[in-house]
Amino acid sequence: MLKINEIFYSIQGETTYVGNPTVFVRTTACNLRCTYCDTKYSYYEGEMQSLDAIIKEIDSHQAPYVCITGGEPLLQKEVHTLMKELCDKGYKVSLETSGSKNIAAVDPRVKIILDVKTPDSGAADSFLMENIAHSTPSTEYKFVICSEEDFSWSENFCRQHNLFEKFVVLYSPSYTQVSERWLAEKILQQKSSARLQLQLHKYIWSPETRGV
Image (cartoon, rainbow, N blue to C red; front, top):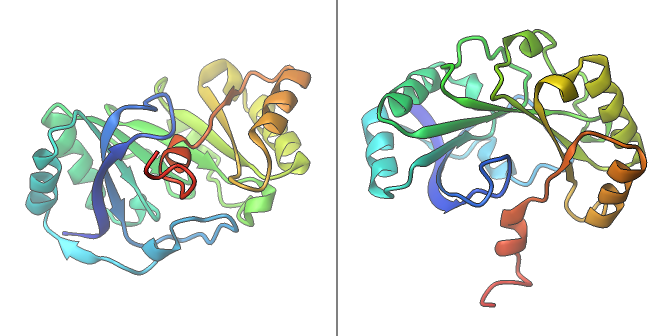
């Protein structure tokens, strides 16, 4: 059994899987309280569901991609069983996690997205450094950039731990806090090896674009 906040079918807005029709499984509960969190409703809301029921709902959408997100999915141990069963069924599974919980037990077939928290997130000390050693070649590192300080901090973190040489590194502008152009210019000016990542879903489903 897992406590699930929601299961929905949408377009993947982030990571190198961006643009793919994807089934999202959002688990309930999070151990962090990031300043820019846009899914605060997942902190507590949700209901217990069996793995069979969850997989049946996923199957109904007939999409090859499944994203396990939260909240913080790794707070619930049975999420590992869910991910293994989905991989066994041939799904391309990704996991979005803050890196504040150990990823060593995650099925190696799962693409892990480590959302490393920057200073402006309010949770910069939450990342478990041993997760770098547990990362696989498919692991991607994501940094939400809210300010000049966040950008410099992220660059230093990536260089200190050789992330640019080993993994895909994604920089996302914090929605409405810094502009996409500003971050693009920073990446170019600083000769960063990070990829600029926009949260595509926020542009597709924003009030300004609905019905267009």
